[in-house]
Length: 121
Length: 110
Image (cartoon, rainbow over all chains, first blue to last red):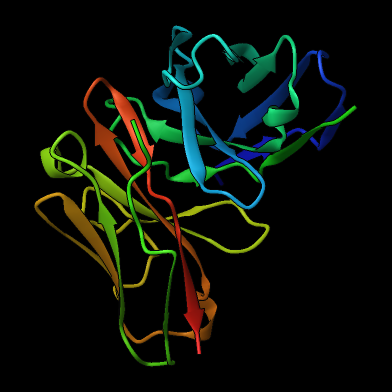
């Protein structure tokens, strides 16, 4: 069974750093890209970027370039989303999802359960 | 690049059909046959319903169907059921190697 299991909710202060995770199982980890999607409170979905676990090549949406870092550790079939200095506007639910590695246009067929990140002083 | 435009809400009675539109430009929806649709129930992760405009992933009922004309894609839910009450998002591949989601549509079953 394909599963993407994300780390638990986080409460952080502005300026703090954070890394959340997405643990994949039930499929060949290096055959599918992992993508991250943001959903701000009461708002829609936004594509942040994706990583190819086979070689860690990463591509970011222009809206998120330089604001977050996406990484992966294929030895433990996990992907990560990281901030070096959080802002209140980073408060959101973050989803990881997988897509077949042949093209960015491929759909997201499995999703993690989401990680709520709250940034507040 | 802005989000694709969807109606804020649509509603219908059980058994009826509803259609959700997703309007973009020639640089996204109109330029590629790579539109997907996702269903999101409150507090849950999105679920893939349709991909490549009109293809079904395994396990999705055929009463969900997709189409496209010009710069507008559409999702039709036929035989509306209570469990279809949810938010729906379109997503399109776009120029400059990016993906755009729609603004989201809340479907209410009356």
